[in-house]
Each structure stands twice: as C-alpha cells, then as structure tokens.
Length: 367
Image 1 (cartoon, rainbow, N blue to C red):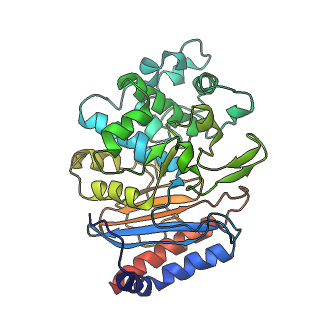
Image 2: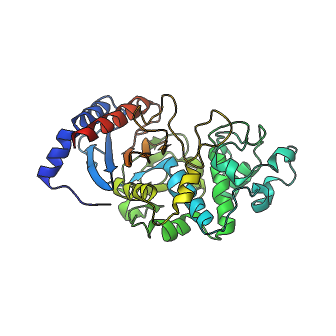
Image 3: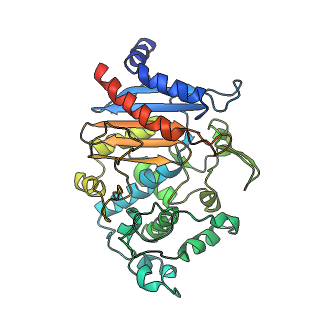
C-alpha cells in the first residue's frame, strides 16, 4: 500500500475527483452531524484519497482535524482487534470456532438456570452475534470494577437458542475478548499491539492513550451521566472504561492511515491466510442475518450505500466511525468522526454514511 501525504497539486486533483465527497461531508458538518472528520480511500492497493475536514469541536477556536488525527473508533475494535486476533489464532491452529464458551469461561455455565442453552454457546456464535445474549445491558449503572463487568456479562440470560436469532451484542464481544485472553494468555490489547498492529505497521493504533497525547484526540462527549467530565483521549464506552480502557468490544484508538493498512491486508493478505479471511467474510446463520464472523456485510439500507458488492465486509463504531471493504472491487473506505460530541442524541450520521460511501464510489470513476 502506498502511504504518503499528497503534495498540494495532487491533493487538489483528489478534491476535484471526489468533489461530491467533500460536499457531503461539508454539509454534514454544517448540519452538526459531527464537528470534524478524517477519511480515506484505498483502491487497487493505493491510497487515492486521504484528507480531513472540520474541527475537534464546534468551537471555531479549537484544533482542526487532520488526515492522521487519532480517534476513539469504538466498535471498530470488534473487527480490527478482537476479530483479527481470532483470525490470527485460527491461522496458527490455536482456536476452534466450535469451542463452547463455557469451556474457556466456566463461570458462564456454572450455576445457571438456563444452562442448557448456555452450554451450546460457541465462539462462532459470539462472532456472529447469534449467541442468544442480549444486545446491550447498562451494567455500568451498578458495576464499579472490571471484575464486576465481567461477572455481569457472565450472568446475563441466554434469551434464545444459540444460532437461531441475530442480535448485535456488546456483552458477547466482551466475553469473546476474555475467552481469547485464556488462550493467549495475556491482556488482549497488549497482545494485539504486538502480534497484529506492529507487524502491519499500525503505529498509531493504541489502547489507553497516554496523557501527553490526549489533547491531540477529538473529544467524544461532555459526559453528564457517568464520569461527570469531558471525555477526551480516554475511551467513551462506559464498560470499556471499567475494563481498564480496553474490552473485546471497544477501547481502540486509531487513525485513517492505520485502518487503511489493515484494510490492505484484508484485500491482499500476506499476514493472515486468504482462506481465513474468506471464512470470516461469509454470512452466518440464522437465515436473514447480515453478520459474518465478527464482520457485517451489506444489507438493505446499509450504511455502505448502494455500490458495495455482496462480497464486502465492514463495521461501524458508535462514536461515528466506519470501515467498509469491497473485496470484489479492491476498495476500502474509512470515515472517522466524533459524532457524539458534545452529546449522543444526534443520529444524522445514519443519513451521512450511505451518502458518503456512494459519493466515494462515484468519485473513483474520475480517477
């Protein structure tokens, strides 16, 4: 993958080719969908667009977003860290996707009233969001430690027979992350940095950013509910915060160039095996689910817009981030924002994402 900062005249050409992209994102900022964004496009192994618009906050005196600004990428953690770790362990023959979760985390099955279904939950079910676990439970209202969060997830009811219902589940990925840690065995965040990010050259991808660089990261929220302070340079997700800044579901901070590097590996694998990428890209039961193993795939009214092929995978982040990879067209698109600033209420990002992706795909025709 070519990685460089475009010279002025080249960037000017990119802005002409992708004029619709700039119009969509400029209007989104004007509509307060987010105060600023960084974005990039990888096509046929080359970066064809890498730029940024707007500011860290809606105050015009604040810092401006740059193409290399690091963001809290929220649930992109699920694919870039946790799913990628599972893929690498699978490549190395250290993991069986049919392993019951209870074998790795016995607390998930011991003493349960619904142990019959709980004993059927496998790592594959967790990856496919078909475990039967609920989607989101605000454990942070009562939990005050990482152990309390883990215990809360272990004790959640399995609400349906595994494999029969698709429900996007944060608790499922928290448990998947903890299960992986029993196999590594060390903290998943540290292992992922050493075993995945460093080999792929993802030097800006970190967990728990140190204090000196926190001011260089756009804030995600003026938190009046939980921490009672401005959230900047520390993970926004409350459960990841209680999990000491890093969970299987959230906690990663990254930037556009790093995520394009990761995408390049998915499109032209040298680190992962091609067979493993193919396996993890396939939709999983139940019928009608768009979920692959860890990844999502395009569905009706997808955030990826109308031009990404059925052979595409991607994921969203609650903070306003997205990553979509079209394996057929060899295209990857990254959009990073802090749409939750200063509060979470705005859902305008849902309209912006498909418009943005459609504009990118149309812009590629001008290159």
